[in-house]
Length: 334
Ligand SMILES: [Zn+2]
Image (cartoon, rainbow, N blue to C red; front, side, top):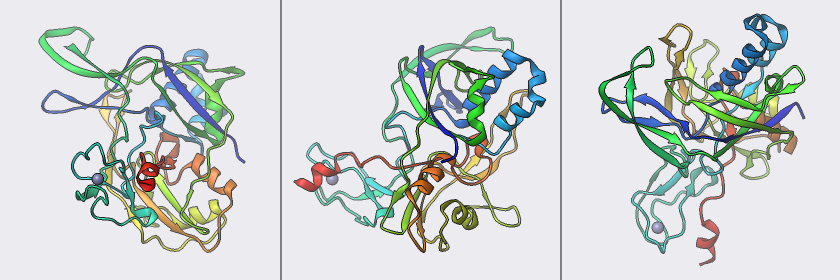
């Protein structure tokens, strides 16, 4: 299998995780480390160690601007609840153990069989929140000086939290400068995640993507994905030729999909200007692939580590397998 590495970060201190300040001065909060943030943090170490000249070297370009992938780093239960999943519309009672009904697995119930309450589609939120700490801070001006009387609340991911994900292909070489593995990185900027974390790597391969049956495969997005049609217009479905090549099977046009649109933007740190936004398919989006024959386990591991679509080196198009629905076994045995 092509080069891939599991990356785990451990927070020695809390990491500020605010993003997208809202009009009410509260902030949405990162529950994971996007692949783009990991890539930026690693590239910053290269530049610190070797100077800005390194950015025009072949080794830097292939690691950070090549065909590899930097996936998002999540806690074990922090992945989005897949959009194909239906959940209780209202908080279930204590006696009701089952949490997920997955349309991608043919579970099409509209009501819970235990409590009879109605179900609704997942919105792609994390299955469980990471531990967060609220901090009230004074607002800083552009020079980092506190402004008078301007307090705001900010979330931080608690110390000791562990998050992990996959780095694939040439991007794996970004994890070391020369022969020296990178063991600490500073995340992000004033605007989003920031803090120092310890980084460990393990030469593992991911589990194969989920099989629905002998020939069909369930594809779930761990991060937003960018797909284009032949004219370069955004579409909400992955490219069949890309999938067929990676899985070495024929794939039927995709009809069973549970998707939402998202906007992929960002902030260009050097210029202080927003990047142009692009339409992306949201994390948690799920596709049922119908193949003409069974893909091999190795092909399903490769696709899992690599991801799909465009801008994978910027963290787009990462894949995951859904964790076991919470307590489903308990429900079935009752
Ligand atoms: Zn129920």
